[in-house]
Image (cartoon, rainbow, N blue to C red; front, top):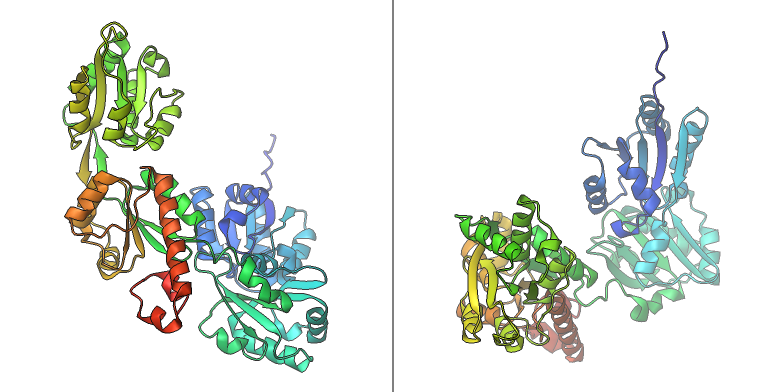
Length: 526
């Protein structure tokens, strides 16, 4: 009888980098996606772990690394022998930790297959995010045991260049004492960065004499930068100086719809909080949509006008039910009310014929939509698949231009369930620095399910109709982009934040304290 040999798993020691999930290497992410068991160090941020869990196999096991290096190595070896792929996820670079080097040595003494995936060291990576260059002669290290540090060597590194150390916040006093005892000038510039590369990264600058007091309140792992290069932060601090850095921004859209907006907000440094205010459901009676799809196939329509991404999705879902695809749009022209809707159409392989070049609204589309001409347009009917609560402006305008309009309910919008109590309290008490409204319904529904945003919250609206609704609810409009699109809305909010910062910077200190300008931008100047 032939015995089936049990497959042997792989072991990977993976560097998580300095903390930002975006700094994981491709190979690191591949190893984590393939893992059956992930053992992680306490220095790995929860935000990065959440990102990894979202990418990993549903049945993958995650557990913290416990015990001495030999204990962790035994867990990894046991998993590999049982046919599992095991990963030890390490903050920074694996070989930047003596304990991990010992684990690798222990695994190397067995027959297990293993690899070491490098990562950017915490000290070096966070220094870059803090805007502190480490040119020339320098030292950058992730420290586990400060008692083993050679402070004489560190003092030499400071004298000749720059120094960056990742240490526990509780060890800062020991590092200060060691540097001073080794002869480092007490007035030498020092930066201390907490939550390095994270959403709430914060750097305080002081000197060797005073950095322990300046970092009071910092917890967990911090990065200490020492030397003349720290003074370059004024010009090079790019991560913390992004326009919306630290702003908590309320995004009243579903996760599916909020993806692009949230990504753009994060790129500007904001912390988006997505709160669905509407849910999309099929129409109560599908007969209208059934006739509309048949009419598209039969050549009944000259134009299809899409006013939202949801309308595009509703039509394509109905197409899929009948086994149809983009080829059945042959001969039908497509108009889209805005860029986001046009992108949704392009995703299905179709290029829209008309997108308003000016205001992206019903009025903007009507301004560029040609009147019906019986000679040039032998088919004079337009399909308008929309939400059940859509306004009549577009349909009425098309009729005035001589077109026959089939105004069809493609989907229904219903009010979403209220968000958790802590979100509702934050909305009403000013816990959010800004809120972005992308339609009149998001205004109505947010107020309906969670209450009106606090007066200190910056209100940004996508277009005139949304602004009108917000005003009706007593909201002050702070930001409205020249073109009604999600990218322009985020850009406008970022520009507004820059203006606030410039105004505050020009104020005398006493006026800043009394200023009505709120949010993280104001706090940085107080």
